[in-house]
Structure formats: structure tokens, C-alpha cells
Amino acid sequence: MKLGLFASALLLAIPATVSAAATRRVKINGEVFVDANSGETLLLTGVSGDTFCQDDTGEDCAATGTCHTCSTFNQADIDNIKSMGWTTIRLGVTWAGAQPRDEGKLDADFVARLHDILDLTDANGIHVILDNHGDMVTSAGCGNGVPVWFAQKAAPDLIGKPLTTALPYSLFVNVKDVGGYDHCGDNEDMWAEHAGDPNYNLLNQCCIAMNGPNPAGLGYTRIAQETMTHMVKEGPGRDDFVRYWKLLADEVKDHPSAFAFELMNEPMTIHRKQMFDCWKETAEEIIKIVPDASISLADVGEGAVYPSWLGKWAPDLDISSDTSNWIKDSENVFYAWHYYGQPSDPKDAVKNVQALGKSWNVPTMLTEFMDCGAMAAAEEAKIGWNYWHYSAYCNHGADSDHYFANKTEADFGACILGWGGGNSQKTCD
Image (tube, rainbow, N blue to C red; front, side, top):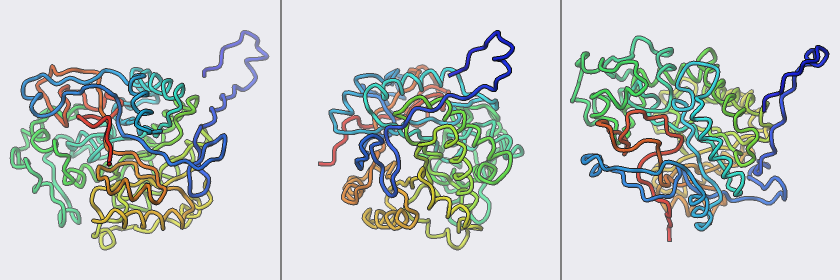
């Protein structure tokens, strides 16, 4: 809320104060999430990406230009979510869409949509995790999530250049092995098409040839890794990241349903010490605005276990003692993790995150998965979950020649939620 201006010179001389944030309905108490009013332990269950409608998306309709999606999250979604027994949504708030320009404010249209959704969840008792969603880092590297303007700061010499993979990543996941890479290979003219455009991942033919399946090889390219390092290390890049979350926290502070802040979906960096320092600095700034916020910690790729090669190649695997002690003393952080087959038995993933949660005295939350075995293992351990993913929407229809991840309009990142077909009534019976 903005404070009004007063004509009195005396009142103008009094420093303005910022309005206090609304109390969150869910908060952290040791290793569990609890109802802020009753203190009752909560098992938070729900979905990632939202709207309840008869989406028609996929390769078939993309070929004929007949795809269509819903245009807004509405009361029908709320009613459906409640009928399924779910309590929580993981709401995508993609940085590239929320802050498409390098400026100290969020996009006005994004903010309006965000408030519309949170007004509904406030009124209906649905809990919301704000998910800074993206995959394989940035549009400038054929992924999505981090704004192109940020990648231009991080790696200006790599914008519009052929994607390459440097050591040590090239030893285990080389972009040249990604399906579709040979469409352009090292043809610099083809890679230069649409260089610097916020929708480079949608417009450039080299990206289009590769990025539909969201391959991991895109996340470890030079441009992806220089972008991630710029973000997590101390300096102007981390400052930009923190600024985004401060702006978002300020927008949602009056919405009690928005209880959790998932700082980055599947962060693709092996610089673990710097990454956790980044989580700490960001969390501290969010807490200044929303004192009872629940804020995520996440590991490489948001996995429940480290990749097998990490111990050999990570330059700073161990987090700092200062950050470790801060985590143990905090009443505001939880460990977010995903399950996509590593380790092979989801029960082993649960055991690992349980041990970590106990050692840090924090809750854990399975914020993405598709495997019903993971859901069962999490529930048995009293760990909350959000499956990937519910039905999705965007503001645009099927009137574009460009196609990416079940979307048919060339402004990826402008949507506030997830994308694709999804399943609005998933069960694991």
C-alpha cells in the first residue's frame, strides 16, 4: 500500500513507514509446516501450474494451428482443487515474464494477473508456493526462465553464438549430443538469427530444433553456466536476483495465502557454496518484507541427491559454516526437492532429504514429480508434495508459426503459470 501525500509541512517531515505484511496462513515450526492459527501440523498437497479447463495442446494441434488454452485461473479451478482434496498450488512466477526489462519494477500486466490469482486463493483458503520457474536457465541459451537482459550482462560475448560446452561439463553432458544440435551445428549465421530477442528460444531455428524435450545438455552450456555463476556469486548479478525477489515479496505481502517462496526451479550450477550463500542473502531480504515467509533452499537441479560426478568436479561443494549455522537457526527456510528417477527408488530419495531436514532442523517439500511411487513415499514420511503438473494457461491462442513446449505464441515467459497439457485431476489409486 502506498502512503498518501499530506499538505502539512510538519507531516511531510515525518519519515514514511512501510505497512506491515499480512500474517501468512502457513508457517514453519522446526521440521514441519503448521497452521499459523492453530499450530496444527500440515501435510501440504497439490499441483504445479494451474487452470482447470479442457486444454487442447500438443504436437497434433500445433501442426494444424488449433491449440487452445484457458485464459485465466478462476473459481472453477479452486472448486476442482478442493474437490480433489488438495490444499496447495505451486504458482509459476517466471523471472523473464515478471521483470522483462532491467528496471526496478515488475511488469504491470504480470502484477495484475498475480493479484487476481492471489485474491482468489486468499478468499478460498488455498495455500500458494511462488515458484520462480524456468528450465535450462535462459532463453538466450535456448532454455527459459532467466531474462535475456540478465544473460546479456553475464555473457555478452556469447549472445547469438553457437552453443558450446566447456570442461568439466563436456565430459558428461555435451550440447553437441543433444538431439537437433546438428540442425545448425557451428553455423554462426543461423545461431545469430534473433540474437538478443527476449524470445530467442522460440524464434531461433537452432533452439527450436533442440529445446522441445527440455534436454539437460542445454543447462550446462557456456552461456547457461556463465549466467548461473553471475547470478549466484556475490556481486551485481546476485544483486539483480535479490532485487527481483524483493519486488515480488513486496507485491504479495498483503496476500496471506502466498506463504512460500521457491527461489529457483532446478538451479543448474555446481557452485554449491555460492548458491547457498545466494539463497541466504535472498531469504534475508524477503524476511524483511514478509517476516513469516517460508523460503526454499535447493541443491543442484533441485535433486534429492547430488549427481554422481558432483563430488569430483564441484569447486565448492561444502556450504559455508556461516550459512549452515544460519539455516539451523532460521525459522523461515525449507528444503525443496524434485524426483525424476534419481535415485532409482524414491524411498531412498525420501531417506536422504529426511536426514538433511533433521540435520538442519527444516521441513522438506517435494515440489515436483510425476511418479506415483514418489508421492506415496513422501506421504508415508509426512512430506508434502506438488505434482507436475496441473492444466496450464497463457494469454494467447494458436495464431503463431512458432512452437515450443506445447505453446504456440512467441512470447514465452509472459505466462504466469506453467505450460503444456497437464492433468487437472491426477490420482495415484
